[in-house]
Image (cartoon, rainbow, N blue to C red; front, side, top):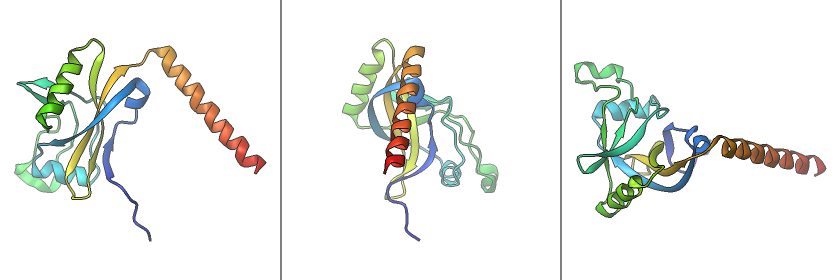
Length: 155
């Protein structure tokens, strides 16, 4: 059986691309506890209502739910604790400047493990979509799907 190429996602925020226009993405490391890594490897995490924001001169991942790892016992972690993101200084400054603009936010898109087995967060620099933009995107996606179906039928 062939192995799937590329990083394996531990958690994905699929709703983010529907709600936001992603202008840029940045890969960030995360400061995690051992029980959090174990829980992520098991695929138990949710980015549904999480966001990233500045705090104490750094960027933190807030409201991300990583449930406690059952076998960790008393050395377990708090499920929704803030987690510090590890970025290069120039990337952090660029993101902090962008967040100061009106309507720009940092949205976590995916938590995955890279080739070396290190947990990474794909962070998107995003602007919120209006309702009519979301409807137009749905129409475009449906039309592309219908086009592909027609092309398949014609051969």
